[in-house]
Length: 112
Image (cartoon, rainbow, N blue to C red; front, side, top):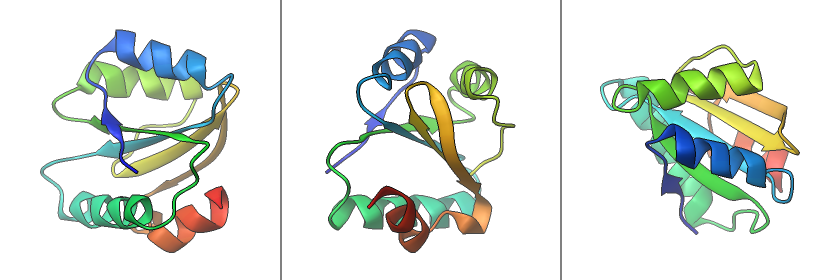
């Protein structure tokens, strides 16, 4: 299973609206941060295992797509951090974790 990178507010609005029908996991990734690189590996490890198939997975690069990252923080009322993972169902935040808490085990515990 893989994720889709979103780079525009329009793409974000679409997946956010779709969370009414299908839960959404957003991974906010900083391409310059070693902690984020580790979290990205954990996220990838989860997706390469047996991820929850009923969830849509998206990635936002926070430096390259700053307006999208800011809009996510505004829409979900989750203060921006990176790396950060946000689980959204029916347009509401269910769970969030950041930094070293973004692990395959933690993601599995929440989603599976």
